[in-house]
Amino acid sequence: MTSPVSPSDHVSPRAALPAAQYAASRHAAWLGAAAIITDEVGRVLLVHPTYREDDSWLLPGGVVEAGEHPHITCRREITEELGLDLPLSAVLAVHSFSPHHPDLQPATACPGEIRFVFDGGTLHPDQVETIRLPREELSEYAFLETRDAVQRLRPVDGQIMLAAYRARLGNTATAHLADGRHIHDVPALDRHDVHVRYRPLWDSPLHRGPVPERLPVQQAWAWCFVPDGRVVLVADPGPRGALPMLPGGTVETTDATPEDTLHREAAEEAQLTLAEPVRLGWVLDETGEVYGGVGPNARLRLAARVTAIGPAAVDPATGHP
Image (cartoon, rainbow, N blue to C red; front, top):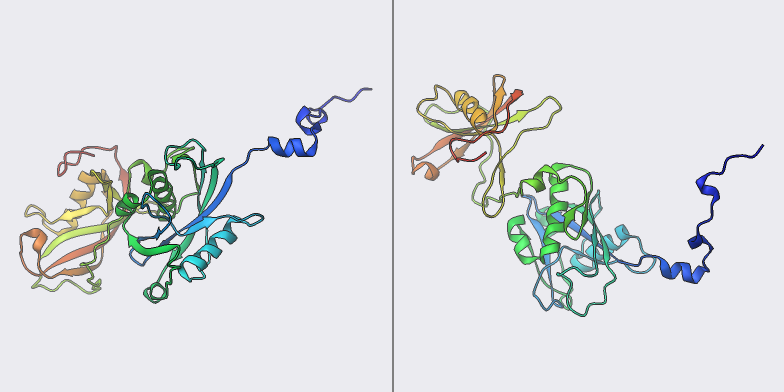
């Protein structure tokens, strides 16, 4: 009895090529490795190379040498460029760069590049103090908000940085990109162009006790939890990207309590229905400048369970969803 022939029994013409000819037929590409490294408030670390004619900046990292694995390259380059030995906790993005991309410098004989972007973690202030640059290669470094970082990077490098940063921020799967664009479904933080804002002047601790009677409560924001433990953020779009915020807002004269403020704002901003909120504490606003200079006031922080989410609607405060 003749046994059936499976597809694997057929030898493809390519497999019969001489070794050298087969090797020459394989796709060739450069390999690169870089890292997302942030400070304690989420600003991303960029370095300024001395050798780029367009004055653009880079993520820390470099070229994978022959026979080297990308994660080894990344750690080596971080040590050579910054003087730091950092563990890499995850692959945040993998990017395929075509040889004809417009961001490629003229006359560069690049067959294309595959770049791995790793999570280099968060630097504490004492680690930042130890950074030492190879001055012949890098002139300076800076920690920047993502909105400012993209202005210093080449466009495709900015797209890669944002995808990797947001994969870390959202704790999502590795982002896969081709020429700066996601090749699968675009994650929510990328779809809404979400950035993180650094507020250097706001450094007030969270007070756990009740709000003193002398302090008016001007604001109520909350961590609103859905059943699987995630929290809801609202993103207010703008010309430089959307900034994520907790649901909540200013206490109005029509609100009987700050909890009423939260229920109202959560419904208006994100169509949330909440269980009864729990007060976590409050932070001191010493000037009340944002409210017209009303003087010292409290900004309340709460937590609440989300019981329902309605369809997206226009926020009456902003005029858009």
